Length: 379
Image 1 (cartoon, one colour):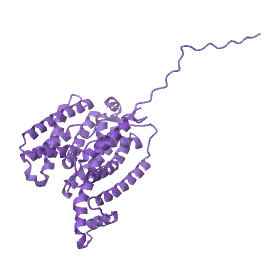
Image 2 (image 1 turned 30 degrees about the vertical axis):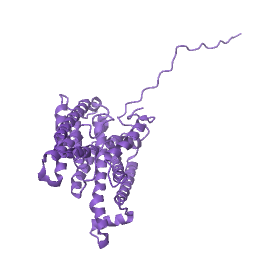
Image 3 (image 1 turned 135 degrees about the vertical axis):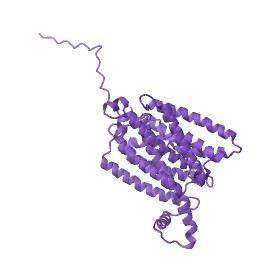
């Protein structure tokens, strides 16, 4: 008679852990989120249309509300040399001379900050990085306050403040570049730490200038350059910053593959044939020039370059070519509506743009870092 015995329990035996997921570039969310090139182009086209609608709507909204159809007619008349009646001159001037350059500048700066934010986060491999992490905003503030207090660059007339801010931003970039250089070139950690140190030093310089200023004008100037505003926008200030943002976006998008590799670390970059130190130097120069050009006309506007890249990565994935295609119109649309809120919420007074971007950006950023499956690009 054959007797069967129960199998003894497999005590002490454990199922081997599942293999670890391969490392992904910083900023990548769920691995299944991918967007084909055709879908990317379609989404970008839709965003451009949404941006055009937002621009027309924002131009028409203000203390004097102008219907979108009338706004579009005035804009078309200005672009094509059309005619308007005598009783429409005042409204036409409000649309074309006051609101249009301001709204367009907001769109340009929003797009530029988003693009630079994407590049800087990949360049320093830090999800908390933004366009101002390298001390550019502090340098621009010092330059603007110097113009206000000591009257330098008066030969540039109404553009003296912008020239001073741009010069200060470039000076800060040169200081960071010189101090962060090492035997192996620019490393992410050295670059961030040097940028923070230079930023604090320039803030101290700015405080001394304000303290020694004979009147309180410098204090208001500091508030403008640290919180941002598009109130000083003119048609003369648009071409330079628009050309800089457009050219910078094209160049950064061509470096999309290199940014993908750099996000994995310098060792991986070297093994894949990408010279991370050399490309980081190029990107540092380019992003510093772009940021300086934008700060010179709008002041330092925070959270746009920090939050927009993360939001876009949630939709299109971590591929920088896709991100740099979608981020500009997203940032432009966001900034257009933020500027509209800044000039209408407490009209006739105006809120600094940076106040609204912070009020919107902080909750969004907290939601992002608490989102299941997305924690600074990891799980």
